[in-house]
Image 1 (cartoon, rainbow, N blue to C red):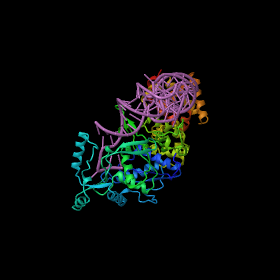
Image 2: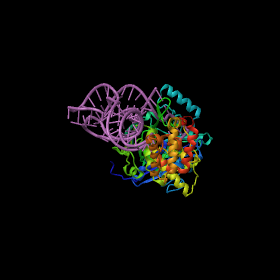
Image 3: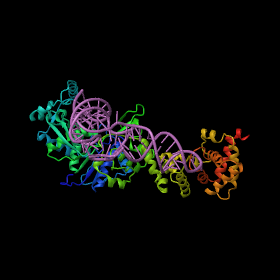
Image 4: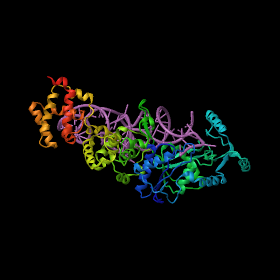
Length: 503
RNA sequence: GGGGCGUUAGUGAAGCGGUUAUCACGUCACCCUUUCAAGGUGAAGGCCACGGGUUCGAAUCCCGUACGCCCUACCA
């Protein structure tokens, strides 16, 4: 508890637009957002588009879409602007160059003219011979200013490298791991400015974090090994580093081998858009993902955004890696689906029903009422919204799709034909088409036949829905409507019960 | 190969020197019930990775070992 310097909390999400937004990155974005909101600070969005080779313009939009869908609003960033605009690194090149020059002038960095071929050969040789550090051999570090200037003037391509001290240890402070000591001899002189004039991550992120007054850098564990470089850079510049926070990685499980590894495509969905497309609710995903590496302490699991904000703290972040368990995500999403209000359920599920061709994309009031009724009936068994389509399909159209096993089990069986005939008569004569009216009719049918209600209910369900599982039968029939039910009973009787109906 | 980080039931977590090691998911059983789901009750599942310390006492503190993961680019 450093009571001394109460710095305003400013965090950022700074992805590189090089592909589809990954759920692992978004966990860190969530933590950053939560921390900022918890302390009334600011959360910024910054594009680290310094890699011209891998830059993908579509990725930028996908990132913004994912941020919006996930509910992470940002106070400053591309599009919304802010006091430190622009928020795209490709448009802040001058500031990186200035810092690089400053570092060269103070002797903390130097120009390197080595070819990639030489560098690669050197790396391999040193690694093989186990000479520390294993990377670049600092060949150009010995160049005099005059030599470097001469080479530069001659037009030879060059990069700027940071001059890492060859001895001693670098100490870094991590909010979740405590003090970490790293031997400098393991660190080679990394590149700050590439030959195309663009900065590397090592330079760019720290310059921006500094000028944008970022207080906490929350990023995955994979950055831990290069953090000493960042600390060294800060020291060279006389800057105070931000508070580093490195939560453990999110791992996936390979379905083939059962082994765990960094979450990737082979472990199912990993991109934010996929979760959306599969019908996960953003609040459920956020709740689940937050718990992968963080806990409010105690038994709390289901938490609203507001609760998460008020409960969030760095102390609750875990340093060990965690495995993404999609079974638990499904359960949690189900909890959120069940909690949905009637209108939210409709709004969220409608796109999936429309896409499946079950409803219009923008249905009128009459259809909306029916779809709502149907969704409420299936609500408690939906794990995802995408499941709403197959779950409610039988509520639409003349006839359902009859499942083979269901037909065999409940219709092609002794007594089924008689049961269907009896319910059809009773339902046809039912005074009012309400849940209780329908229940009376069905029970009356069973009484007349002298069988248990279940013996009538099961065949009726299959005849009316094509399946053995589903919402309560009486509610289902009520929603379906008398005409459609009678038609389906007649059809099922004629189609499936012919053989056994004789006896 | 080198370095860093990590290690509590199958999974996610709680625990911060004294508990029969807690909760959730999953699994199984039973209850509820017209089916499924939901809900309820209960069970199985841990030598708290292993080995040494420190201590009256260790899952909790220290050291070592093993294993796992990450990094080791003019990518982030």
